[in-house]
Amino acid sequence: MAKVLVVTSGKGGVGKTTSTAALGAALAQTGQTVVVVDFDVGLRNLDIVMGAERRVVFDMINVIQGEARLTQALIRDKRIETLSILPASQTRDKDALTSEGVAQIIAELREKFEWVICDSPAGIERGATLAMHHADVAVIVTNPEVSSVRDSDRIIGLLDSKTEMAKRGERIEKHLLLTRYDAARAARGDMLKTEDVLEILSIPLLGIIPESAEVLRASNLGTPVVLSNPDAAPARAYVDAARRLMGQHVAMVVPGEKKSFMTKLFGRRVA
Amino acid sequence: MAFVLSPDAPLRDWLAELDAQIERSASFFAGRPIVVDLSSLPQSDPDLDTLFDALRARGIRVIGAEGTDGLTPAIQSLGGPLIGGRPLGLYEVPDDPPEEPVRPDPTSMVLDTPVRSGQTIVFPPGDLTVNGSVASGAEIMAGGSIHVYGTLRGRAIAGVTGNPQARIFCSKLDAELISIDGLYMTADDMDSFRGKSIHARLTGSSIIITEIK
Image 1: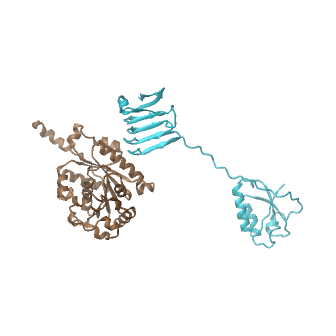
Image 2 (image 1 turned 90 degrees about the vertical axis):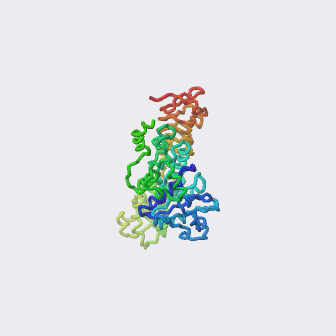
Image 3 (image 1 turned 60 degrees about the horizontal axis):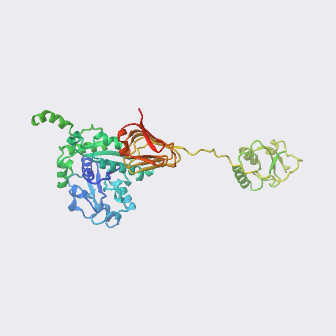
């Protein structure tokens, strides 16, 4: 059974697109068929992060308006055979997304892939509500920071009231992905602690992605971080999160805990 | 005195009409002795034998039949046709629909999910209980008291329909605003109670907060 997953947050710049690319690549690496879908019509980014920006011929809006078939718009990833991307249009705006068109595309993708990962635009307007509308599972990307947490809370409220599942009276499965987590700043109390975020949002934790230059580098390279540097801490955290999405039990690693042990050993000499 | 039913052909239609009548006045036939007048029916109606069973199935107690000389097994089982008797005119069955159990409107509401930022919950008839937290940017309003078994981070407005007796209880106070009967208090005025279990009530024209220990 295909699963439709929405990566959403409310707030911009917290790492939705990076997380979509990384989770998509990590799931596809296990041999499952995955499509990542960009819903940010007018401000598309997923194609760049996936390194497919020069391969876009047709996009989702072309498919909705009947100018191209879905198979023509899908771009297969060059590194992982089971990974595809459906780009958004850069020249149109979000009004070009119709709910019938989106429903049709999601239904077709459900037949072709095991995972349909929708990269939601920021905000709570049309693009974001359509991206979450057909989802079975939601990953809420949150930074350990008050404004991001409140926006996530707002999004969770919408997931519980505005989605297809909510309208059927079912509860959508929700997971928290804490990104840009800086262990040192958390220790100093400059950032919200993980347990504070969990207490406020009261949804299960999918993973903690440490703040890392590796993530920025991967995004500029056009390679999901799990492929560009599989040994880096954020890459491992994304792989673990993907395995949890598949229902596997993986112990949670809080970034910095290991490092703090190392700094205990070596840090004193420096200080 | 017995009531007389006068079936006419076709019997199926007449029974449907009877059902409609029973629907309107459910208790009318209960316990009443009924005589069936068969004079408007053709004596050879093949449904005649099933008529009595159909009536009994509807809870109608048939004590006899008149207006017939037929000696079908069904009429024989009643001891043959009745003779004599004096009609007293038509009787209109009074409308007496089955009584709907009267359920009073609920005066309290319980939520088992956290109230998320941007959501507004309004319950004017009475008390509102939230079994979870109320997020920053969320708003809950009740005509009566408000109980929050979790952290109250948003706004809680009690006694919105003009009730100075309304109160606010929460297991952890971190509210943006609380209000009772139109009087309000903002976060700055509650600093000393932040993070505590509290109980807020109205005394005169001020909101009094006490810690619950």
